[in-house]
Image 1 (tube, rainbow, N blue to C red):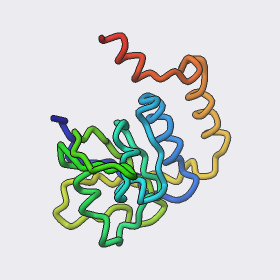
Image 2: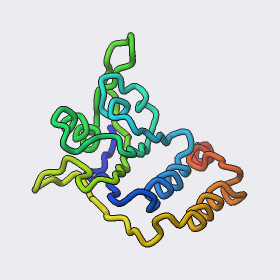
Image 3: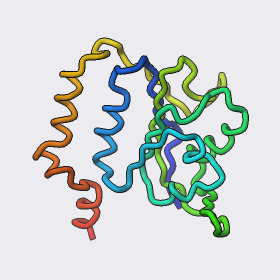
Image 4: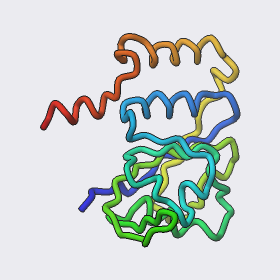
Length: 163
């Protein structure tokens, strides 16, 4: 059974302030176990088999917090140790839930959190570097540099060394 984290980090802020750069940089640690989604159907839709092998998912403007149809599926993805997956033309199956989420939005209402909700930690991203393309390009260059061994899947390499 998985050990799910009860809280998901959510990044709120204006366009161009680095939310995506941060998530992609962190996601690089997970290599092929990281996925960037921007369509709510790929996150909480019926055919969600795409999430079966991912440990970290970056939900970039992937849903509208006011959508009344999706919060239940999102809450299950966040807190439940097991969840249902369904691939097209295959039966649904229950699997251990190892997905961790980073949610980002340019909107003021990022997640469908209620007053007593325990699932979300919403962080306001500073606009201090908004539009500073040289700053963000340096971060991207570092991420893709030799330090990363040309983008080697660090997580998988670590996993192999433990076996």
